[in-house]
Image 1: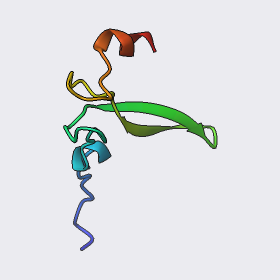
Image 2: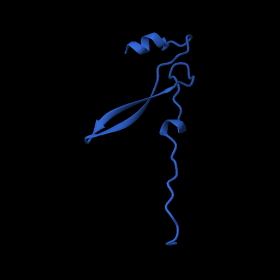
Image 3: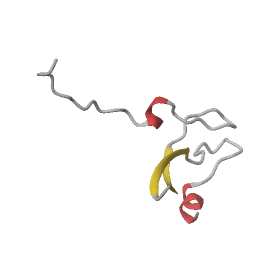
Length: 68
């Protein structure tokens, strides 16, 4: 027991386990990482990116997303 070394195991990012889907069309969307400050530390927050499906009612063109 005492001779075992502690090995760090890589943990998958939270967004890898639960991919986001568009609420309107159900297609997978990319993940965007934003951060917010909590107790003087920046904390990552994974959110869905806008839908890129042109047939979707919530479609946002890439040019419009870049302006935001």
